[in-house]
Image (cartoon, rainbow, N blue to C red; front, side):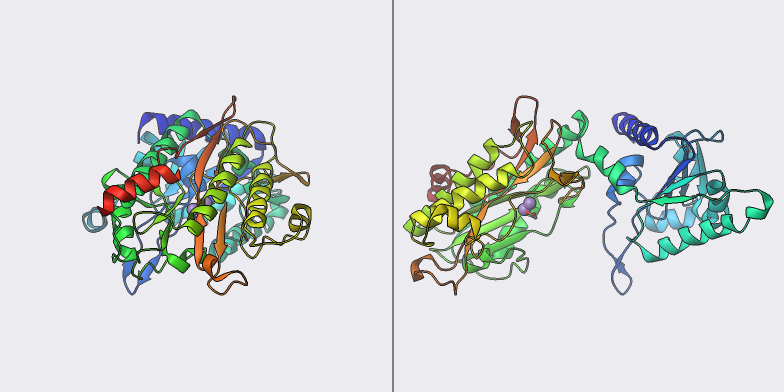
Length: 440
Ligand code: GLY
Ligand code: MN
Ligand code: MN
């Protein structure tokens, strides 16, 4: 494990323990290894909370934090080393490695979990555990608790409170450290290059999956372990399906293609959408709608700065989109009426962004005490307005089947913001220049 990650994980554990105080116990299980079909497994992806606190990438592990415990605050359960298993399935860190590499105070074989957990829980008042994600593990936590309760007559006091860990841990994850920002810049730069690559390689008659392959090529050759989420390549009307992931259809000249794709670099996600012509240039309707979405996105990004509310970019995007739809005659009425009655919703039905980090839809509260949260330096969010005119929409035929989204990843800084994904081309002029070169 590299020294920076080791130090960061240690600081994160300390920060969490400081928030929770003594006589608390944090329990975070590693992600399970999932079967894909029969005996073939999905590639393992660690649970983000677990990785954030340990930097440890193996399944079958459980992290316990016990602030102030004399025997050690950081206790890790993990798999024992096993020569035969390691020949077949890869290295295991083992208990010694957990202490020397990860800095655990104590490490035990994962097979001893049921035996040791009641004992570790005994001196604690409060258990912090994210109940409800994995039924089988939930049951084990309850069973350990019950075993401690059963010892009441011997003077052992069982924990009195079971609390959801998410609120505390996720508030830490919401604010990115300089090292996390470095990794997110890298994920963003690789993903921006992948988008530019497909803008250069796309030709009419290609299939959507061919563009998906080009994106994957750029992600993997640049050190990403995988896409951060399933890649969307939607040609023509399929750009109006928000989570279209089939990617099997041919791309036709005259249509647009919407691509939502980002790589995961060292556990951090990028999330970029670009929409461009399959042929050389936008049609006049496509260009009109594209310019509206781009203006909405640019104005929304301008709202990303400290002391603005989380919702301000969304409000601004909706206003610009609504104004544009009115100007084009796709909607009728006054701007106030369109906004108040949400008449834009058939064409813009999602929100303008989300937190971004180790998870593409990252953790962290959006409201505090019923009010939208203020943006603060270190937060990273996406800004992703779109317009989707369904093939059967009740509008003039010339607009139908056009789907456009433009999405960038934006870091809130002290001075305002930094667009991490700026290198992915998005102006009409830049895109048409690339498409002209590609198709001639
Ligand atoms: N790619 C998922 C999203 O944009 O939210
Ligand atoms: Mn996206
Ligand atoms: Mn997104």
